Length: 232
Image 1 (spheres, rainbow, N blue to C red):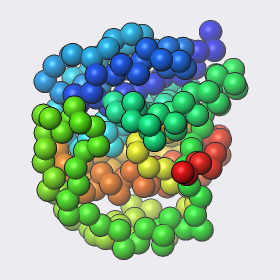
Image 2: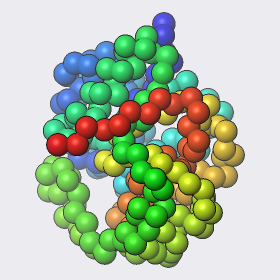
Image 3: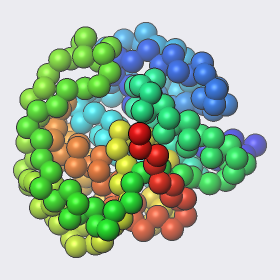
C-alpha cells in the first residue's frame, strides 16, 4: 500500500492527542515519542510508543528519530508536535496530509515561508524566555527560562552549522514533512551534531534556532515539495 510510504512522528509531552480522531489524521498511523510521565492520550492508529527523556522539546525528538532510524527511514516522514489541535498548527498539519493524500502518498510537503536568505532574516533573533503553547503542557511544566545557546544570536549559530549557505525556506511550529532522499543526502553526523545542542535541558534556546532552520538542515530539498504558508 502506498500509505506505507509515510511515517508520522509525534512529539508528545502531556497533550491528549484527540485530534487523531479527526479527518485527515484518521487516514494514517503514528509513532509517538512520549516525553511525559503518563500515557493518557488518544491511541487511535498509534502503532508505536517510544519513551524519551524530557529534553530538547520537539526538535530533539525529530533529530533523535532521524539519527536512530537513519538507515530505515520511511520514504516520507511527517513531523508533528502533540499540540496539533491548536488552530494555527492544525491548519498546517491538515494542509500537509491533504497534499500527501492527493499525491497518492508519493510526495512530501514542506509548508513554510520563503525568504531571500533565512540567515540574514533571522540573524539577530535570540530568546531568553519562552512558554509552551499547549495548556496541558503548561499545567505540568510552567518553566519559562531558556538555556541560552552557546552561540547567539541565530546568525552566529547558523554560520557555525551551515556556513554562508543561502537558504530560502523556513517553517515554524515544528510541523513539516520531508522526503527521505533529502534527509540522507547529508551524513548522520550532521543530525547527531544538531541533536547534541538540545539533548541536556528541557527548554533550550537552540531548539528555537533549529525550528527556524529545517529548510537549511535538509537543504537543498530537491525532492520535497515546497508550499508557501497562508498567513492570517
